[in-house]
Amino acid sequence: MQHQENNGSGKGMKSNATSQKGGMQASQLMQLFEDGLKDIYWAEQALTQAIPKMIKNATSAELVDALTHHLAETNEQIIRLEQVFGAIGKKPTAEKCDAMAGLIKEADRIMADCEEGPMRDAGIIAAGQKVEHYEIATYGTLRQFADTLGLSAAGDLLQTTLDEEKAADQTLTNIAVSAVNVEASTEIF
Image 1: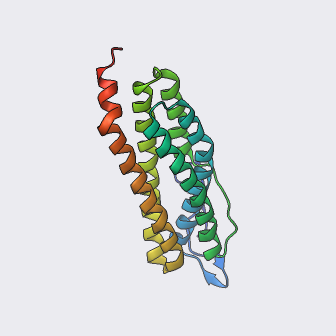
Image 2: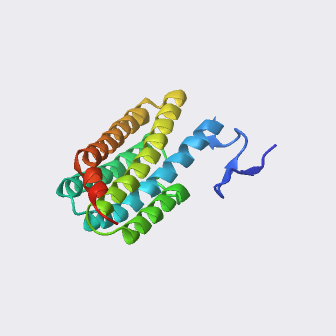
Image 3: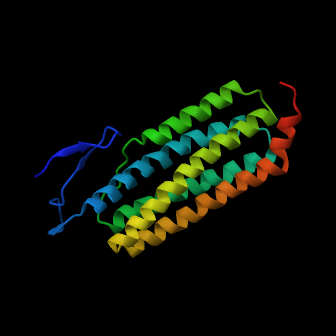
């Protein structure tokens, strides 16, 4: 029986394994893998527009440096995702990631609502870490899917990005606890 299910994201997903890929049946897990790649591909592209706004609004030199470094990494991650698509014989395709769109919208609101200086920097770090945690969850899941599907080249590429996202999260934590949060806590609102 072939039908479409709504998984809550507004995206229809095939609920059977009758899709053909190179003469072989594609599994439901492969469909989830491909959908996840499309989602994170859109998300990374959207971040190349969002991170410069964070850089512009940050006042901590350490935070600006970390965001600037991660913007360069994000551009490399887009290229790496294109390599993952190639490894599975698919054209790179972006599909709007509602979760990332929401996280970016929240970051914009935080920057608009917070007073310039340590308070806004703390807000940028908080928003940035939410993004990193979403990316860590996504890349971790995609890496596991790749392993299960026997896609070692794709899995290795995804692991590289996963490691970068974890490092970016740790960098933001270090900046927050070493200076920004302390400075923000002493400011009078």
